[in-house]
Amino acid sequence: MPDSGSEDQPTDADESTRSLRRSAKRKVSKAARSGTTARAISSMEEKLAAYRRERKIGKGTLRDTYVAAFRGYVSEGKAHIRIRVTEMPYVPEATEIVADPKVVRTNLRRFVALAFPGVRLRVILGDAQVDVETDRHGYATAHVPAPDLSPGWHEYHAVTIPDNSAESPIIATGEVLLPDPRAPFAVVSDIDDTVLRTGLTEGFVAVRQTLLGSASTRREIPGMPALYQGLASGIGNKPEPAFYYLSTGPWNLYEMLTEFLDIRGFPRGVLHLTDWGPQERYVMRSGKEHKRLSLARMFAAYPKTKFVLIGDSGQNDPYVYVEAAREHPRQVRAIVILDVGDHMAERAQELVQWQAELDEEGIPFYFVADAKEAASVMVHHRMVKKDVVTNVAEQILERGDS
Image 1 (tube, rainbow, N blue to C red):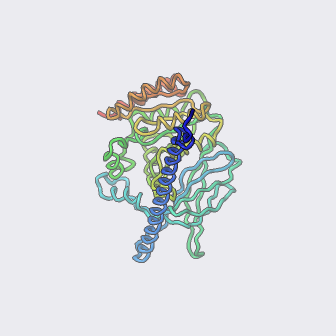
Image 2: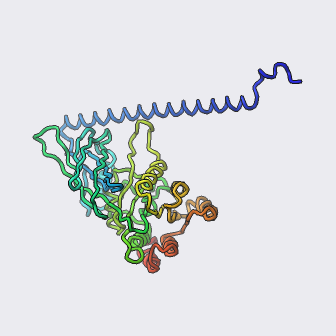
Image 3: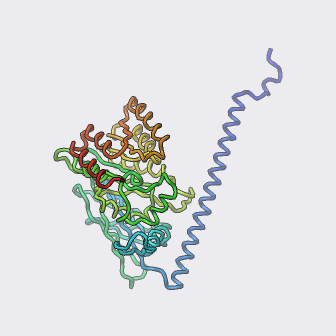
């Protein structure tokens, strides 16, 4: 017979339940502490920014207002536009050499330029307009009605609304893209170490590149411009696909990145960057989460579009892209991941094995050595013409590392 006191003894299930509760409490407590820390740091940063603004105003050193009108995109009859208002950045002449201290100061100022919160703006696209106000980091997002646009790029204007009627408004011009629905696919591309050599996986190399490099001196990944030009040209007379450049890099580098893409011959596209500043819910924004959410928004914005996802093996691209393919299997035409080099050999072995497993799962995942191998994959999938492989190979020889 069971012991008369057995009903008072804890069972394995009871202990398991208590363990789960203790674990949940620890997680909640940790999250609460993390949220409290984030709010404290965010508040401190806001007060410091306000102090710096007042100090500069008092000393007469505050530079003029600058409005950055970032490229936006159009979906479901609305243009989604992001703007930032800051102190005017100092930019040296393009002819100044990379070793010039002015370049270093410029790159630093991209991160320390004062944001202007509470600035009212009117965003105008065609006959439509929307009023917005910048947040404490100087950002504002406008969703402007755009029901009658034709596919392609269109200009919009962001105009400040001064509190003082004696002040002149500042006008900035940006662009929005309405993808052509007849295009065979759209391209989502990582930036760092996929099209732009940054050395993010090599620690100090990335810092050195960020501080010492300008758009004209930064190097592309060999062969990638020719590959992307091939994707833009496509096969036959189909419309050019839309390009979206997705990066964990900050909006502070937007102008340098767009200039770099233009100089190196990459197709014009919409950039999806992030804000590195402290947030109320977390101290630093998660790069992986930023990419995951950005992809989810793009898939939702264009539910009938197939996407080609291009990234590298250095960070989280393979995992974020595969997760997206599992959630949206009909919208991913191919995932192409470039090998970043011998210093990530263990990751490379993992991805080679994973490619075989994903093939059985029906996910079109390709881990490639370089842009030439990527071009061959895309020829196989009838995304580029056969001569693109030759063009990429020639570009690798011409611009590649010695």
